[in-house]
Amino acid sequence: MASRREFIKLSALSASSLLTTRNASGGIQGDKPIVLSTWNFGLQANVEAWKVLSKGGRALDAVEAGAKVPEADPKETSVGYGGLPDRDGFVTLDACIMDEHGNCGSVAFLEHIMHPISVARAVMEKTPHVMLVGDGALQFALSQGFKKKKLLTPESEKAWKEWTKKSEYKPIINIENHDTIGIIALDAQGNLSGACTTSGMAYKMHGRVGDSPIIGAGLYVDNEIGAATSTGLGEEVIRIVGCHLVVELMRQGHAPEEACKLAVERILKKNPSKAKDIQVGFLALNKNGEYGAYCLQKGFTFAVHNNGGNNLYHSKSNF
Image 1 (tube, one colour):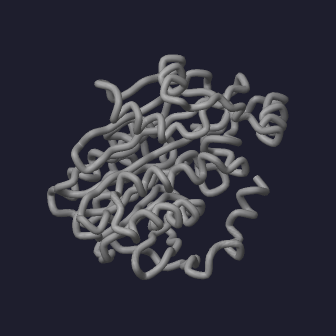
Image 2 (cartoon, rainbow, N blue to C red):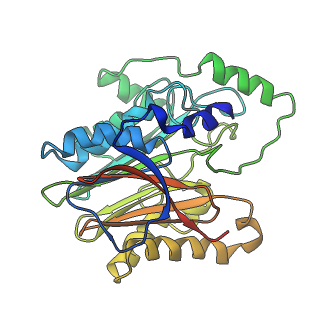
């Protein structure tokens, strides 16, 4: 899509942001504080998160602030406002958030709300539950003061109507057609938190939910070890409980990039022929501030903001 190609042009970004082609290794040391986000739009998300972290703020507040940036951007067709709809023309949103204490909140199949990540946080902090879905999630959001908004923009509606002429469903997810922003952070106090938010796969079946709102699949945080988030075809991430796996691999002593690689290879091993036609990527950060990423296909980028600036990297891949 043209908007995706335009987005890669980084001239509009701050001077501290740059695109580098070097691969980030699992042993990279990030000074505290540090925040990581998936894909190119992670640069803008990191800017908002850094405003919190640089002042000694909590990682939880930082990841929520960062995630809200693409949620509110009508030009982003895979997250929040402006997201491409399902095959029936409805924009449905998924999000989850997790703090340093193991508290977590999630919403799935949520409509009409600009910031599902903030609703997920409200679920975490104001209910005895972890996940609310569908109309129940909407009613809860409204009770908390969130306002209904039409999320289907004219541009996304036009793209959907064009799609209905052939209704071809090709769930290949990469830089031109990705589906998630995952954001993980380590604050100055040494505490970790993470968030994940998406409008899901374009033209999905009505009611489909991927990995993004599933704690342990699209996001997992263990304040003793590290945090991980994922992007790509959510069904494959769910099948291996991907982000929990990455964190547990770090617990076993693997560096972040190696842990991400091992998780990707588990997906590859389960179905090698299918893996060549899909994208899955993991992004991880450990308690020491070391970070890394790995994906199936070339094209997965991630942004890192620490005291050295806000930079974009290409993940290593299998193919």
